[in-house]
Length: 320
Ligand code: BMA
Image 1: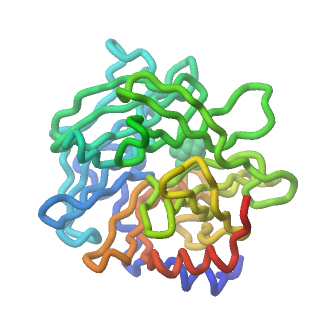
Image 2: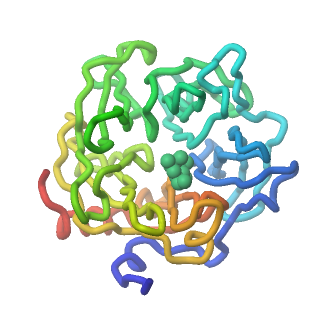
């Protein structure tokens, strides 16, 4: 699988990858992967990591680092654990968080997948410090995952991007829903289709990062899942949505921009997976640190430039 020059130019893997593995954890776990990420007020980085225990159930655990690369302090005291007694949808664990800061509330919204015998659904909790959480609970019924909030209201409504899967329907696509209060959701709109046939993003796509606000629109990273005879390949593509009307797709890249290439992405509990869930921006407002899970077994980081990603999309994107 030769490395594509384009990919290397757009997103450059850190030489210290993987930056976090199960061996770094202060208690016994199976794997850690698929983190959310934010920059804290003091400029340090917080990753909210998906931790899978040795039953196969996941919970969320914060790790903090001054430079976002190493020196991680893992906060084993204040984990977000499944609470199946009060939230039965969390029976088999909670997974794949995405974080958005809601300045109107002065709180971070953590949107995550909860997993039970009814399937995977979208849940939300609010926090100010990643030590104590106030659960909103299940906001989308199964099957639904790969969700994140936009940071502010549009016409008095919050916006959630998510990926429902309906049994019997053709493909899993990206949708947008609105809510006046973060609890009641409606006005559902399909905003981006999975492609068909031999495309890298045929049949199943899902939001990766919370969309990034730029002067040209909301920059969306999404994953495409290609089914092959030897299993699925999770790769990452780009799309751009209208700033004022985030349901309107302005452009979508034809090629993937990031794909499993390194050993820690090719081999693990699930082979050939790159799964970004969070990013931070450097002080220049342009340098993007993309945090992702590798092969469902580790956490890694790659760097790019928002301006270059937008320029690439302009050249390689088509209007939906
Ligand atoms: C998806 C999610 C991710 C996982 C990926 C590959 O459906 O469950 O958490 O990384 O599959 O196994």
